[in-house]
Amino acid sequence: MNWDNVFQDIQKWMAASNEVMRTYPLTSREYWRWLVGSLGHLEQKYNSHPLVVNLCVALFDYQDRNYKKMESGGANG
Image 1 (cartoon, rainbow, N blue to C red):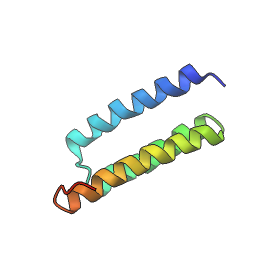
Image 2 (cartoon, helix red, strand yellow):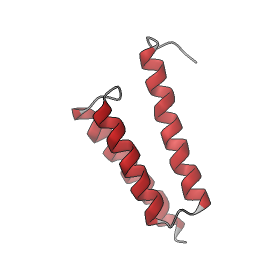
Image 3 (spheres, rainbow, N blue to C red):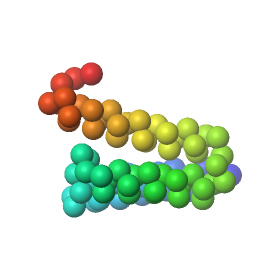
Image 4 (cartoon, helix red, strand yellow):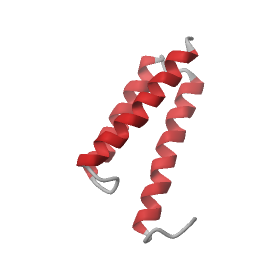
């Protein structure tokens, strides 16, 4: 496993996420479709390696927490 490539791809994913959110906000279905599809692609690229899967889950969870904060009016939690 080339971990440099994995982490570079994660950085690219984060940049792409920011770019997608310029068009589709975090609260939109379109953003979440993109998120799920792109994380699935990233996972498959590395043959569902357990650590890559966990990193993708962490990215999903982070955005889910951000979504929930937005939906609750930005309350800390």
